[in-house]
Image 1: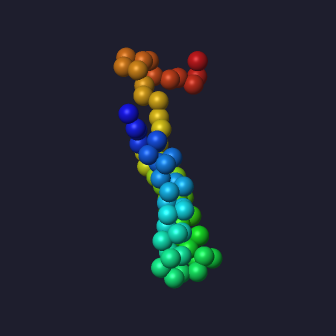
Image 2: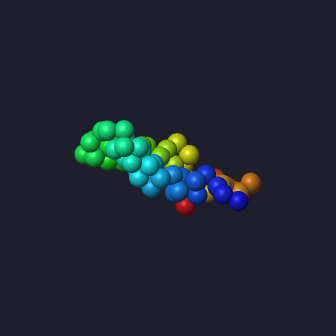
Image 3: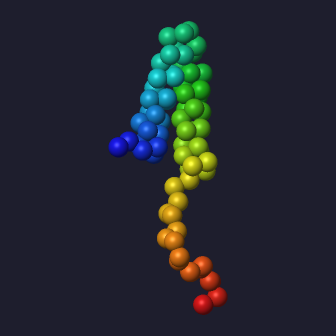
Length: 69
């Protein structure tokens, strides 16, 4: 089953190439279209890293971590 991070990994190059291609065909110069596509790709990466961060679930009943031990 495809998970969230699998979809993000597929969307990153798709956004970069797809948005750049669409903007280029629409008449925007390549030197402008590439940074726009890259910005969307970086936004996807940022969302995957910071908004839906991959965290390990803590097992139920695990004792709290004590750094002083």
